[in-house]
Length: 165
Image (tube, rainbow, N blue to C red; front, side, top):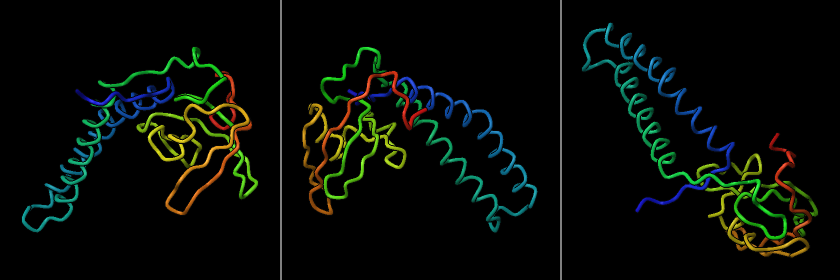
């Protein structure tokens, strides 16, 4: 049985938009590159053609990957999520106890994760460690660089936009 892919509504719409873009604009651009490369003649020494075909393969692989994710997607009902306990979909403020810095994060499914903008996978060490904790808890996370300790400062209601707006 395929693995269920957890997505927020925003994550679902982002994947749908990317898929539509790849199928329309992306395919058209690659087809044009192949057409131009073919006009150069001899395919045995045509690096432009090889590159365009490689790009086409990557594009089709990404399209297949997104279609598979959407086929197995489970969209979180963010309106039904509470603020008592951290779960997939939770938006929260954490304090790094060693550095003294605070950051906003959201726990999301792996397909939507982007740590650079605060979207943490539920399958990552930090995401796994946070699940099930409550406001005020201190959470220790084993990472390759050692142990990081966080304090849960806030679990926001669903309508909180923060860095995700």
